[in-house]
Length: 91
Image (cartoon, rainbow, N blue to C red; front, side, top):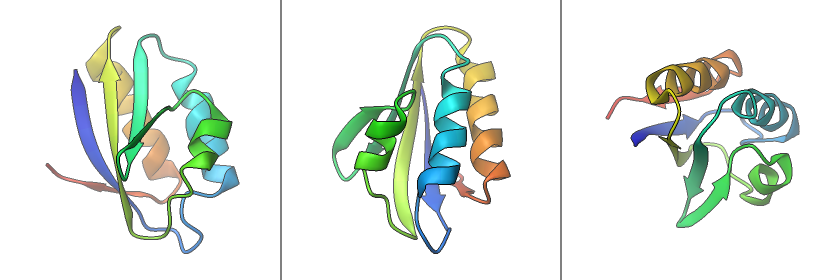
């Protein structure tokens, strides 16, 4: 399993547009992809689940990838977060 911490820097937090794009990207990959915020773990492939987290600006989330090509999946998702102007925190 791969794990990475991400800081949501957008003023509106993880709002609908970036959440939708990131969720859609996650759906392109096999395996179990989760996003964890304040102890709540959701399936990143579900836009409704992502929105339910209500991650605010400067919220730290943990991205986990389990199964499939974990390295490729993690890099693709980190790129997707980066394209949305979301910072990646180095572990």
